Amino acid sequence: MRVRVVLWILILAVMLISGCIVVEQPSQQCCQPQQSQQCWLTVTSANSSVWGYVFVDGQNTGVYLLCLSSVTIPVRCGGPVVVQVIDEYGVASHTEIGYPRIGYPAEVVFYYW
Image 1: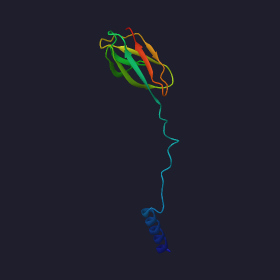
Image 2: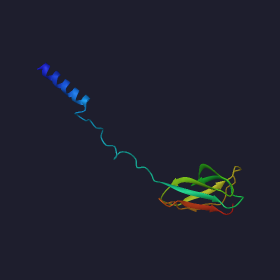
Image 3: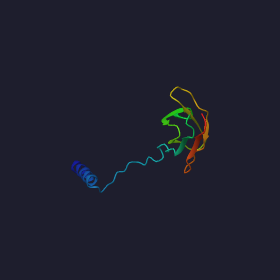
Image 4: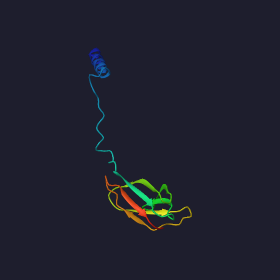
């Protein structure tokens, strides 16, 4: 009896090693958080007095906008975003509103500070 159990264990071990029995991990699609869609926002300085760090929804993006240039940054999709430029002296510009959607990058242009 004992020899028979050991024999079955050996047979199962050989089948597992040779690939005859496939043990799969359970699917985790249901348990993983959904990837949020990413949209893009182009911020343009159309005036030589508009330059500084770009803030989106009150958060510094770390992207620096030079005067008379443009930058493109990733933003959340599905609603308006509030954009502001703050220079290195802490002076904030007026705010602009962008409406990024999937497949349609938003653009805000600062014509004045």
